[in-house]
Length: 396
Image (cartoon, rainbow, N blue to C red):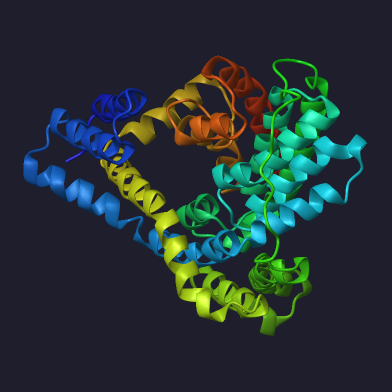
């Protein structure tokens, strides 16, 4: 039985509405899928089958996300992420402070740290820079968020894993494909943040910053081992393809193996082998919400797959005369492999998600002012989407 497109659409809208009203996103997505199936004419048994089938379809992604938790846990729990961010900022002159801040979050997300966590790590540094250089909080958060968006699309994180596996391509290929759009996103971020550095509120002159002890932090050389090993292993297969070296091209080691291996080697390099299990536990805890969201998203995906909504969307695009190429970025923007992935960075900072609130708290920003950042973040995401579409959409 095929569910009518309008029933699937109502299920989607219900899920989004519930999320906006602060209902837990996982329950909202599953409930939206259930309602969509039922009003589409399915009975309870058929509805269960659709949701189970949809959720089971994301299990491959979930396994890889859990594996990514090892790398993320090592980077965050060991302090390696903090060391990398601090060194980037400290090695740039004051005139390049905004570039340094944006580059810091780009690098951190690029090596597998979630954007909210990357912003939380760099935010104290950004506030100190803002106080010293008299840059507005608006400018500082645009720099951090924009840099994070740029790094996110070239990162071996759950978003990229989902994009890669959703289209049955290698994770490394998506990361490489998004490199140029990411650079453009970084440039646009710096330009926008510089443009608005005198707008909005500023860090007060009497704001006190907590000083952190460095004795338990790894050295920079040790801190970069984890991401360096991960990147090298992920690039072996695509480099082999490019150079025509069969031995490398057939290496084909999945991210499920690479990310934990990189985390283990990095832990050994930092001399913290006894803490590896602790890092793994911490990383898994950080991935729990992502895994649950993926299950909910799988339920909605099952609803959409069982309906004729995708066919209706294609028909609308054909009738409107818009190139089919734009289906990918439009889908990415609305649902928030390269074009979809970059499209998902355009409005992923809206208030119905935790990113909006976490980043606002990180720089001590009120709701109204945080809303003013959304437009600038959209421009960064849109710039990367446009570049990706031009590069891979065969428009010329």
